[in-house]
Length: 116
Image 1 (cartoon, rainbow, N blue to C red):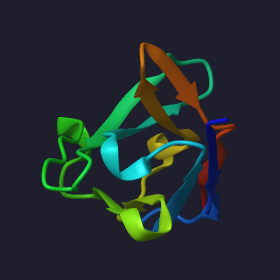
Image 2 (cartoon, rainbow, N blue to C red):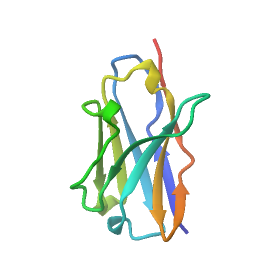
Image 3 (cartoon, rainbow, N blue to C red):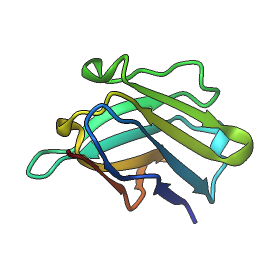
């Protein structure tokens, strides 16, 4: 069965960096685009960005460009989200997602808190 497991979240000071990981299993990872979403307290879930199966097309939410970078390692079935220059408004639960055969799969999420 499909499993998506995020990790790497935590508490970081404003201006700091974090690298999130999403380990995938149960499907042919290298065949599918993957996405990151986030949900801040009291807000709707927000799309962060998408990476194509080969990693050569990486649309990212315009407000996050230049600070957030998505990458993947198909040999390790893992996707990454590098977050730099973090701001308090980046505080959220971050999720990796897969859309496959008309089903959206979500991981359990990893909490990122940006605070002094």
